[in-house]
Length: 206
Image (cartoon, rainbow, N blue to C red; front, side):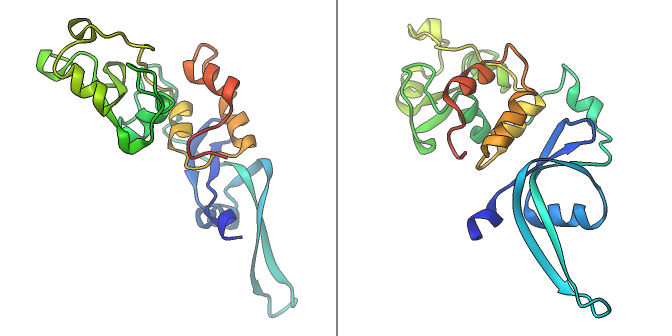
């Protein structure tokens, strides 16, 4: 039961757009305040409350793995082609499948680093399209040079995740039904969609 309570619930808007991960406490609050419009996925947990003094019945809320809720004031911004999610190493490493994009070797997070393809010292920016995951050895070797100057080659082109992709990247343990739902919102040409469709959820997912 403790593991179930740690499981994140995927919250969407009424149109089905993925919005965020919430824990079971936030989900129960949404159910209790009648903000849940409908449910998707599978039943995740059943939580019991107090006993009604009048009826003698005990309250119960069943929480699904995916819940659609009322209201989404920023949805147009999130769907915009110009939207860029916040850049952080946790999401970056997962975008690149925990692979060093120079040597192609898979590593744990503590062995990885953020590399600027065009170094900051040469005018490069700290944005999704100019950063890749690199092991510390490759990053040290490349140093303040471009891949061409260092005689190395990128194994994949860096890209900016869409909001739906970023939701996946933020997930700690994505269930199979949540993964299927999120994949349906990834662009058809998304490198992440192609990789995950082949290999299935990985790295902090289930």
